Image (cartoon, rainbow, N blue to C red; front, top):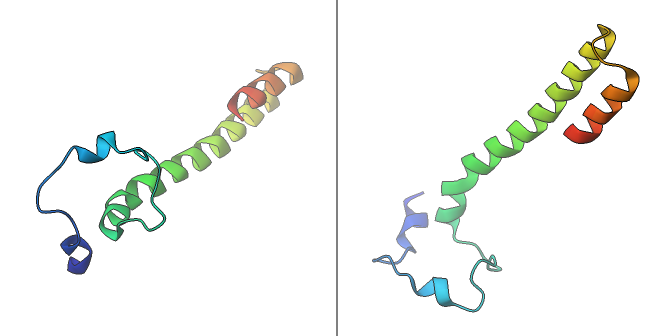
Length: 81
């Protein structure tokens, strides 16, 4: 793992902010940066997936309890989805 951090520049630089390709991922990403952001991306993906799943469950439960009409449930699911 230490080898991933060796390829980083010695000092911070703002030069990349003015580069023509700023904001576009390179063909080969820096392993240290990928490792640093991996947990954030995975947790975001999980939250979005689980959140949508739970919203559908809640909507279905509310419809079953008579709290939603069929039309209201459809609007809810379209809005959530």
